[in-house]
Length: 124
Image 1 (cartoon, one colour):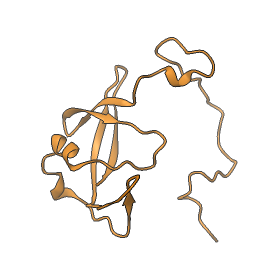
Image 2 (image 1 turned 90 degrees about the horizontal axis):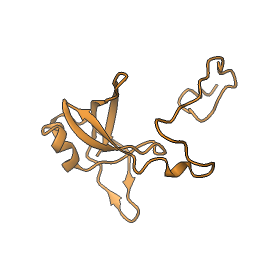
Image 3 (image 1 turned 180 degrees about the vertical axis):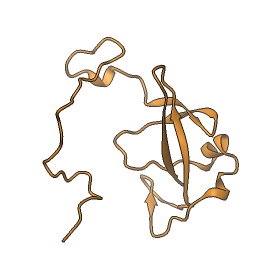
Image 4 (image 1 turned 90 degrees about the vertical axis):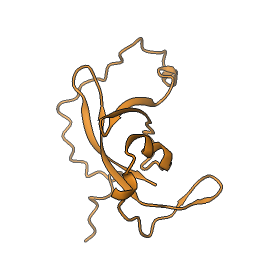
C-alpha cells in the first residue's frame, strides 16, 4: 500500500470545513480581476537570529535558493551549521548550481496582533 502523506496535493476528501472565516484586506479591495495590484512586492521585514532583515516571500515555490552573502548578513557563522544535501541538484534558468547544504533557523514575522515564528530551511 502506498502512503500519500508526503503528497499534499492529493486530498482525501474528508477535510473538516466547519469553521471558515473570510480573509480581510488591510486596505481597499481592488476591483475584480485586479487583485495582483493589491501589493507592490513580496519583500517583508522579518527577524532572523534577532536581526531584522528583508526576506523575499515566494508563495508559489516549494523551495527558494539563497546566496551565501544573504545569510552572512543575518548569521555570520551559518556555514558551521549546514546540513548535508546529498543527491539533490539545483538549476538556475541557464546553468546548474552547486548545492552547499541546508541551513535551518527560526524566522519571526512581526505583526501588531502577535508575531509568528516558524522554522525555515534555506537551501544553498
